[in-house]
Length: 345
Image (cartoon, rainbow, N blue to C red; front, side):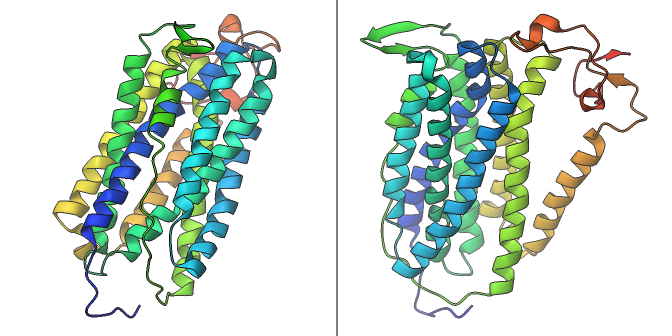
């Protein structure tokens, strides 16, 4: 990639952009742990199929919109789409809140909220383009490290706030009219409050290596596939395996998300302060990350030589925890004892 020798990194704009990323990450980090528990709180008979399809739709919309947004930004040379992202995220949070206010229509509100969230996430991802194009090649590793550090810090603070919100029992405290604050709605108010406008300065067009871009797109697709898998299956498995109530599930997932954020912060510190990008080629951590996912799936796959399984039968119309203890003879529920509390068949 050719670079103008007179071009300098715009650190002021990058720090402003990362502040916005941090605030957005706080909001999303506090919402993520409550989605499935909140659905179960509203309607105990809600099935996993609905949740899986809608969450999958969220990520599908995100990927499609991300490609379109990148094309628009490349042609226009600015990131004004970030304004639209904040508006859409506010609308998504509003629909999510309405699920508890009008429970008869919660399915429609849930679908609208998730699709708008995916749309907002896809549009908002152009923020990464802004950071990359506002930095020189020499500073890009540090700039991107700060970007990831900001997001990781938000992932830590968001669940930490949610642990505090979990002390407000459902249905919570009525503020006025239809506004209630509890462990499920407090993150929504936080998300709406933090939906601020990001920087909209012009960015410079540069030549790119198309083959490298294709490889990175495929890598990003793998990462998003893992994310949608975790965000869809993990909440349901946790509630079933550990016999968790909706409140307990929120607490556990908030804690685990915060721990993930801490690990991310540790890695980002290496890039920001120790300039690991100048010592380790970028492709090595990418390959190691994908290999880590691959090993995870190999270990947690229900192989035939695993002797333990989660014993429960989930009848339609009844909560998962109601039927725990009854055997369900399906390989889909075989897994390692160290991950889930299980019983021998």
